[in-house]
Image (cartoon, rainbow, N blue to C red):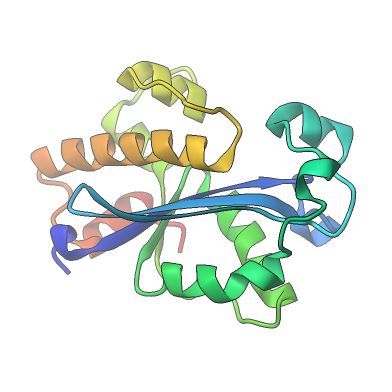
Length: 191
């Protein structure tokens, strides 16, 4: 499929910890849908993780138990989020992390795992800008001259990840390395 015809959803989740297999849960999700460099829509919600948010997570994402107490559970937002993701390519900074949490939550909500392609901005950025000291979102934002509206909050991180992704895609296209979805998945795919 020609790359300009592909619809991408750049997604970021904030969580109660680092491992969904150990009971950690999503406490915020943000997603921005783009095609041919244009934004098509957004999805954003705090999520009641149905458990306390530990201090290390609160310190990082500034999401408190009080903020999510009246928020919908993931099972409640899943019927809206799933169609938002349908037919797209899942894109994230460290995509395995976000995809792992999103899939764990969909399974917990009684839905299957996502079967859409996934791309990760880290290997894409390594191809485009080799030799950076690190490839975390802060380093990439600094390198590409991008500013955060809200760091470690889902939609703020999504906004910057969209720009990083588009910069990487532009460079790879200019070099002739990415012409199709299949090319992109080979360069930065998760599965």
